Length: 381
Image 1 (cartoon, rainbow, N blue to C red):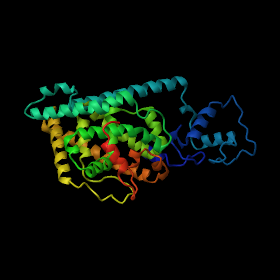
Image 2: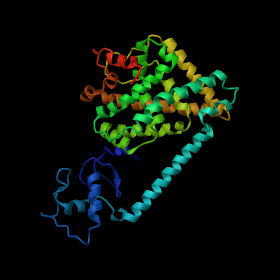
Image 3: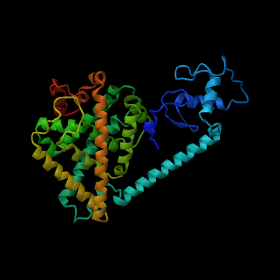
Image 4: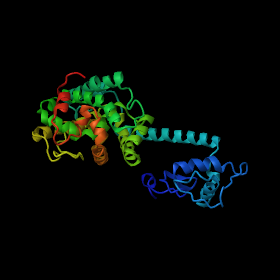
């Protein structure tokens, strides 16, 4: 069976426009779906009369010229009137969908809790001491508190929702995120291993993991999927990329029930010295100058995440399963953002209207690093 993203590119069997899926039993576009729902129920109470000979051409261009022939073609290609829901049936269906969604969310949460039970960070002292040393616990508390005092404080005071409205332009969407990203950079500067790197390496790390960092950070401060997000992504990226991005958000949800995992993952991903972006600049093959320091820093937090998960799991096998799922998710996320980068590369007009920090994520070969360095050096935003 074809996926919904592939079906969206197939032609409507009624008028030939791009279909959105199967409606009333037939692959059709949004316009013909609405037309059939509105007019099929009128049969017997309304006379549909063709102004010509009853054989009008029904195409994307001329479909509105004759309702009689259009409705006849709807039935001819197989649309079924009995599949049109009454208002009572619609309400019952909405309630069923809501109940199923709630059930799925509860099952997802339960599965996650079977592996890592949710608790407050203040309870770290009760974890199995054989896995987490006192210095490990202090480091975990510092990570938690540093994130809460920067990203979460600004989120609560300035960005309770993101996006705050339904965007129609790419540059507007990323410009709203720009101030959130500035605060995230401020958080990274609190991490000793990051702050000790040279400016060039800091820029490389933030820039090279940009898309993945956004996904993980947003899952922490703005978990879930809102109407504003779905509409904005659809307007900005189109159906295919939006479906992939929404899928990545769904796949990260099981990890959001723990107060530490994603905060550690955010640091681990940032300390990836390789460049996994899909940009059009000439510096794609450049990596960090001090790759050894970056590698050692990443190892510190990978080992800490392992011990943290182990301290909250029944067996080592559970930890292996957890990391397997985590790696699969990261690989999926990298693939999605290669697709996003490739799309944004071609939106030159939008890039030119982005805020300086966002624009610096897609640098031109001749650009200097002034915009990025200004943000990296700023103490307050």
